[in-house]
Length: 137
DNA sequence: GCCAACGTTGGC
DNA sequence: GCCAACGTTGGC
Image (cartoon, rainbow, N blue to C red; front, side, top):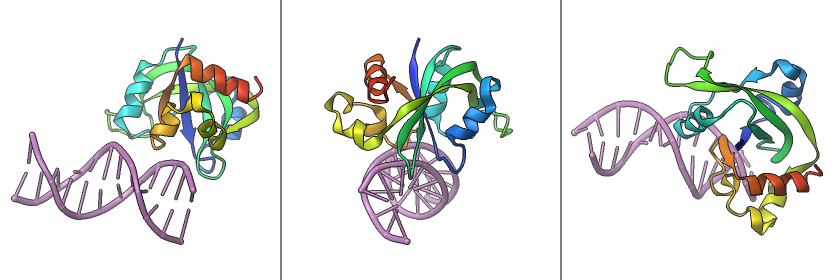
């Protein structure tokens, strides 16, 4: 099983929006970046990911699970773009802020720190465990 | 709200 | 195929 991080602006698609979808889940659509798309192609059903709020909040706020592997993005006719479906698993009791992540030397290599603009990122098992711990899970 | 960093586009 | 110009993202 692999771990990932999904980034979203709360104004566009928030954790609450994701929660409201429940087990039905939702397409992670609108990604128009090749790197991010390639990571989504690597995802398998059952993979877990962090749900990260960018901009104002800049925190990991929830855990999601991949429920459908990469398929064409229904929001565009452009066949280059694909997306996966994800569903909310649970909230992170104590959201982990970007500041906390940056303050932890063990997390210095997280893609979130090194390439903050990438909207879909891989997370290592070590990073996953550390962030979960910081978040009270 | 600004600006740096990055990715994409298009002219040559 | 290179590179300048442009648009977008996201931290500060």
